[in-house]
Length: 452
Image (cartoon, rainbow, N blue to C red; front, side, top):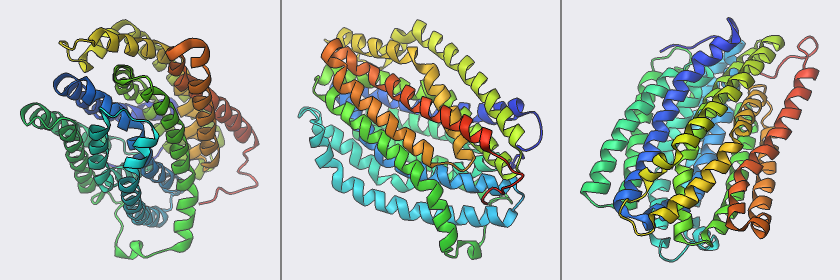
């Protein structure tokens, strides 16, 4: 695998070539998320599926804080790579690893101490509380594993390599599916087995990435590069902390929604969870386009090429719209069959669970194009070094999500909760789009040099 210079060549072709391996990798990652849900729902029961669902957003809250930091760190790496600063790339990569280790240690302590209190604050039903807490505690023990994979994947994508993370996810998917079958079906470990399988699979992806990173000249740093550099660490945290804060804000808003969902009972939670397991599959191409555009924008911003940056974002918008409409159509036609994978066919209340899941799915599909545009504009701003506006967009998401979840059920009943996600996407997307066009219009490299 090698680094890719995205400051030369046709923007659309470069973005698509970068995004396709990411898309395939995301398919693999979402596949084992779906397999987890399917194994738990079909072989451990509806209560176990509901327990995983009750834990999902809290799990995401802690892990996404680490992921946000690594994504922010990669912005500086991509800018320095675009500027041809080989030494700067290595030093930024080394300091990113150091900071990620420190952050993941802090997250372990926080997550283990707050799991019980937060689940109680969310009014998690008593019949699923023990399983939800167990699932969370096991997953949170693996924070360093998630961190190791994400920091390496972010570094690789920053220098234009999206293929190595793809192969890593292929390996992880195979490991996860095999271990799910062993732990959940053969050993009857229920949610604990699903959590353990996920951690081992993620660990295999981290090991594979490490074996490639150490052989890539652009990222191969030595002991000298690991020496503490306060100015560089502050710059990386300036980029990474707003993205981590953005994810935390989104997670907090989502937990308010989860609290409202928990008040609707285990059947509603199970149906909601079944659709949420498809959420990642629905947004996988958006995440891939976002990763491609962040790397593309970062490199071209670093190289001072404004028109190439604009052309790439324009191409990304078109790709996002076409892809989102295609995915929405496919899932609208096949939604019931796919959602049935998560529910025990012999369960007494199977149809009630599927009814909840289908209503939620159809509402999400109606606003899917908004989610895709959100990723394009947010990633473009991040690549340009603006991680503050994306953080503010997380605040817009939180306000819209909470408002929809608390107010719409007053008029629409339980169905009102389903509009929380599309409303959050719309609120964030408007802010990001307006900010991007304002910044790109004002951007001039003739009288300013990008901060590298």
